Image (cartoon, rainbow, N blue to C red; front, side, top):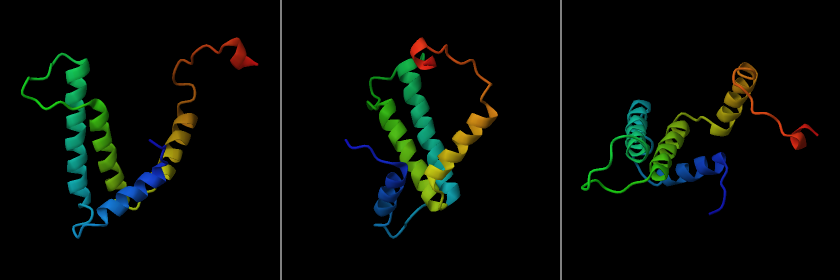
Amino acid sequence: MSEKKIKEMQTEVDQYIGQFKEGYFSPLAMLARMTEELGELAREVNHYYGEKPKKSTEQERTVEEEMGDLLFVLICFANSLNIDLEEAFTRVMQKFNERDHNRWTRKEETKEEQQ
């Protein structure tokens, strides 16, 4: 698979949703969908890494699939509100790099990294 930039993903989702008369859901409905998908991701993580194994009657799904579903809904939500996720990501990384630059214990640099 080829790598896609977030902007490309946003355009692809917009073209997909644009095929349908209904268009994007309302912000409240979108938030409900995102919450639903997050719950499904949590369930899968709990099955694979937690103490609650899957029932034999439950459909086989993966953490990767659930993350993909959540990403799709997040992109739909952003598109519906005209939010550029690349810009949003740039701003949040700037915030973390400035605000939290000394918050966590850094790994030791190797001699190669110091040169």
